[in-house]
Image (cartoon, rainbow, N blue to C red; front, side):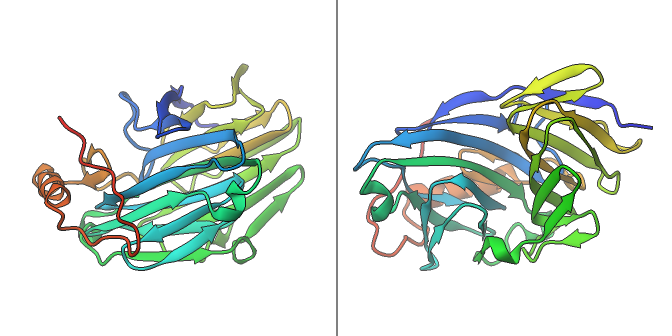
Length: 291
């Protein structure tokens, strides 16, 4: 028995201050997959010498951010004083909890010549009992992450557990998150051990039940049932993700995620009032959106 399809999500384009992303989650008819409440696909983008990304300091609460690169580099700086370059295959896991501020910029080396950027950024909603946890930042190099190799399939386990392997990245709920490269005419079956499961096509094309799904599309499978099966029609790069359903409704406003609307209102007031801790050495910031 194979799992059916619960939703097919087409991305919407968003401008993040000089570069565009394809936003997949949240979607009007599907707000989350497991603990994933936000999913952006950035690039592939080309920056001319002297140019790059400049996401100024901004706040988060109630979530963990996960940055994963295919090409390029990003310099992460946050209000805990952490400064970390992230490279392809590495994982930056930032737990916002009660509140953190960070910036994401292209480094000096990347700006010195023409550069490329291709990345996925996701937000993981924290369980209610961890929403106000202490902020933290952890970097994991690609050599620290388990590789799962099968015939025609090579997968890096970014976070959580899958196929008998567990990532060293500390998580707060049952989940799985993998980057996969799949050869043409190869079948994958995501095991049914996780309740909610989805596949995102970074590049290439997959087939499910006679229908093809190309770059930028997320397919969410029905919970329960059997394995979530699909075929790589071409050589394909994918993200596989999901986990246990959220323990209740989550509100998302700007960069804030919470089970409480009142908590989000407090975070808005705190950012507008300058009560969040600043990123050391960076006087810039993104103002609170109006409305």
